[in-house]
Length: 252
Ligand code: PEP
Image 1: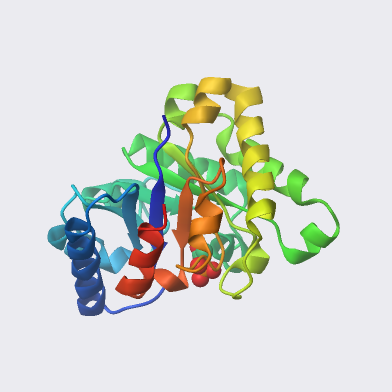
Image 2: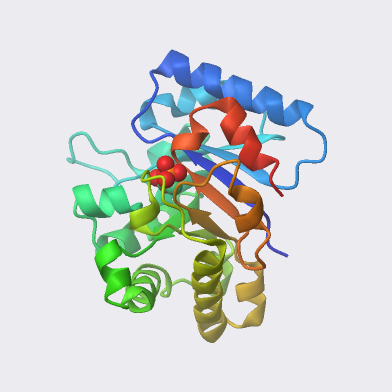
């Protein structure tokens, strides 16, 4: 059966010492809180991966990068390959975040390549998808999400899908303070699960973790996580304060 997950996405925040301290605080809080019902993951900048890996206990907290390159190695100055990410001790990589799609022109095809390289390197993938406000207003959100998932993931085998977590992140809810209602999120999560069922069958659909992301906070997480197809959250702003993040981790 699928796992509940709460994953932080620190984005371009914290220096290395600050990040190490935050990771230590989260790891200790998770270790000291009995009855946590989810896998906790910290998504941190490339520069932080090795240092954070050294201070977390994988019994409590796993580690994710926020991106990887769409080439395996070579003359790509400034890029970081999936194999390099894996060599830091990271377990996951977040791919397809709307900030990367929007600001760095990441396309569906490029993300397909990144997914392949990440899985080949032994990383698990947290694959983000979601519509803009204009797309939702135009009623094309289902189509947009379907295209992103089909285009970048549906070449994978059922076995490979076991290493993929999907995060639904409506762009209009990211960092805006505006959350999708739990019913809006559930509707999309159920739709994503139906796509998985059509392509891979009921077992894969039931086993795939689907996270919600977009202004998720301790105050709204319990209602979101209570929905049958919402298996946790990808958390931006609220993952930067240990107490807020723990308020979400304990929301199940
Ligand atoms: C995100 O960037 O993945 C995210 C969900 O951000 P926030 O929680 O700040 O809306």
